[in-house]
Amino acid sequence: MSFYIIQCICFLEFYINIMLMRKFLSFFFVMAFYVVGAYAQVLVQGQPHPSARNISTKQESQLRADASFTFDDIQYWVGNGSNKAALVIEWHDGNRPDAIVWGYRWDGEATGHDMIVAIAQADPRLVLLTQYTGWMGYTIDGIGYGESRLNISYDLEGAKSEPKNAFKFEPPITNPLLGQTSHPEHPAEDVAAAIRQGVQTGVIYHPINAERYGYPSYDYDHWSCSNGIHWQAGW
Image 1: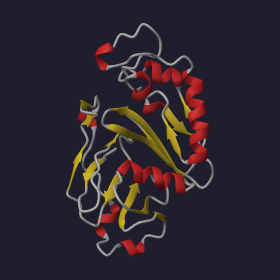
Image 2 (image 1 turned 90 degrees about the horizontal axis):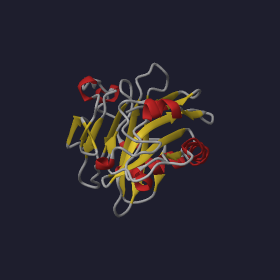
Image 3 (image 1 turned 90 degrees about the vertical axis):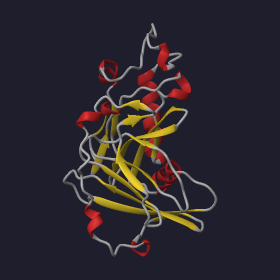
Image 4 (image 1 turned 30 degrees about the vertical axis):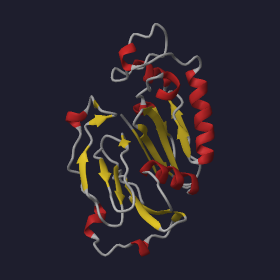
């Protein structure tokens, strides 16, 4: 996957770590048609991503060729207010529709995470997987899209054996320098409950997170979906 952290000014500043999809999914946030800058993500919450050397930065957006696209062309709007932004998601996985656009309106202050959560909660076709990963806030770990309810599952054993995941599911906790303070007693049940609630609300909040355990489980490669038009999740 190629993805970007895009800082947009004029109406909204946001800094969110987007850890999606190694190959296919490109995430673009367009604010008032003025993008200050974009760069390939090589850090996650200030830490080097273990696969950064393998991340391609050359994925090209299909929407860049249409310079005539304006806010007036957006059909699905969420929220109310005098400020507006557009969320554009491109999957590049061979399924259609490939590029989808939502509009977002708000007053006062809002973050990029606020925008994506609001859109996922409003559009029943979209499901967001997000996790609180530390003092910098939430990361976006997966996005799914489908006309019917998505069948999302979690591979606990795969997450436990993932060499890139330093989270300890069982004692002893051997990574205190990373901040982990405890471990989940029933991780499979916790995740299953989060999935059940998330497919109803549009947002799955990863329960094995830094708020609860001091350090998050970076296990997004082990979340999958057996149906739907699009699904990508990855570390």
